Image (cartoon, rainbow, N blue to C red; front, side, top):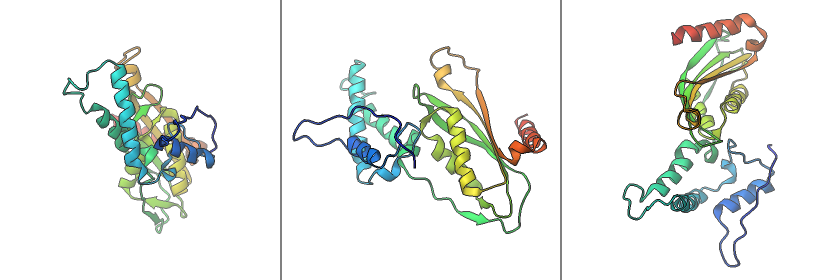
Length: 243
């Protein structure tokens, strides 16, 4: 269970005013001592009927942001419904991994006792930097060294799990580690390796505005960490595939 590491000031409504749905959810999380950082999944603390209410609340807050930016959303037909579009995008698409439960993944026993290197990828992933909420778009390669007790998952399920983990505000280094933890827990392989390469719009769109820089990072577990030959084989196959 994740524990709360920080507190923020709660909004106390005036007497007679309803408590915002976000505050109800926040209170539930704190009572359960469940952390709610930007890259945490909080789906089990949200009731199904609350998601439409949360959409309305975020829409209202986003409308306030547009007004503070001095954008005429009444006279400008292009931004008239922008607040709702952005709120819906956050809750159901780009940050979906926070508000929706883990997708169902069918697992199969390793009947044939496969113990050879498997590589899945490149899987296109989309995330967002938690510092500026700018897009992170890249690819992930996954290497698996199963054993006779490992659970095997279908090829499309790798993409679903990647999408669920990545669709949250976060930094790339933590995202790859969290995905590795999830796959390790689901499959229990002898070895697991992940490599992610991504473009970060927080450096391309703003700041230094460097359109060519990318970030590459990796996580090695089990036999990939201990066996340098296996690690070299995995990385060499990725390099050959990229070229």
